[in-house]
Length: 481
Image (tube, rainbow, N blue to C red; front, side, top):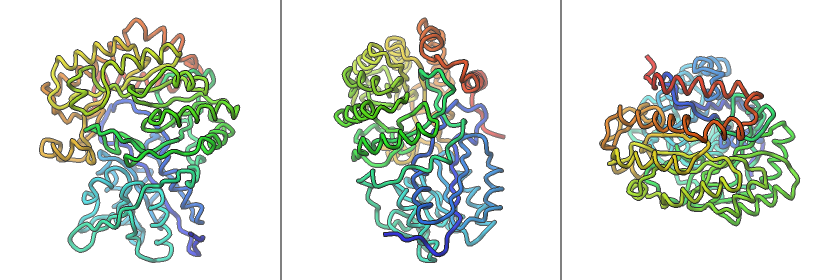
């Protein structure tokens, strides 16, 4: 049981985006960092003063973050980011260490979990890393810092003498209802949002929520970088708890909601209960989610639409059966065709996620992917490069063939080429898939006329997508000089 400390601290949370090291990066969604929001809520509940700087929104630069660190001189600085954010995270930690040597500096997220030794070494500006699910760990580290006690608690890694010492593993949070809602007030910013087609006429006020955690599937490329939760065990919030948070978000003006769950349909019975709870509550909200094609069925999709869902994304990855088997995706081309057809019959818009540059992938495999995209007729697509991030099964097997610099890992902007094609040909296929969608006979009538009915009221966001997209397709991502 925690009690408010007598020594209340200023605690600064910073989220570092993965695209800082490239010009003309691939357009990316900007979601709320729900896990950081929960950690901030726990820390604030203990009586500390919470501050937040999110470089992902582009409203603040890394220079702004450095200025804030120097001015605030916080007792604890928590820096969050994925693998390509590594050098920027180290830079910010160095600024914090130089500005206030007594500040406790902590790294959290996928990279800190998978490769803590990249942050912890002799002379490192970081004091420790949070390993795994970090909300409760951050709270306890701040609590220890306020009392002046050892912050090396369960769920952390520290540098000790000549090596990294990892403390006892912290168990995953089983009772998700026991966690507070994120500090939503920090996310009341129009720069957050998804580049998804949404059936909302009014100006979009985006909100983000999570109902489940965990994914048991063994896809060889997957790590926490490509997911929003840790662990393979499926854990769920009660539908009533989720609806209470939706009510709170709606009362704050949110009219477009994204479920950040790794796989919204991982537990079909739970999803149906959640949809019925939303319907019975009378709360009106338009929402989007992502799921697996092999778990999609028309009955559940129809119930989702009745509950306010208008868009669903599916990880299709490839149109080649050989590639799907190699990826250990546990789904088939036929599953993708069935899922997209069912979503179209129900009236849901769709986003298809494709993965190119897979190990041993050939031109023939990629042509199958192009052909599948045309058959399933998605409303929108996102095309990423196969990137075995630290923490993925493929990383452990192919480490010697992967980039040596952490900033060179990026599933949208850089290529860790394990395919049979050249880098140039892979970039060509990425651009071709986007062009094939844009010039398809269904895209303009569905996206502009029927689907994105809020085009004019959300012109600024749509124009940013066009501007970023054109720069990306015409110039391609380049390292920042």
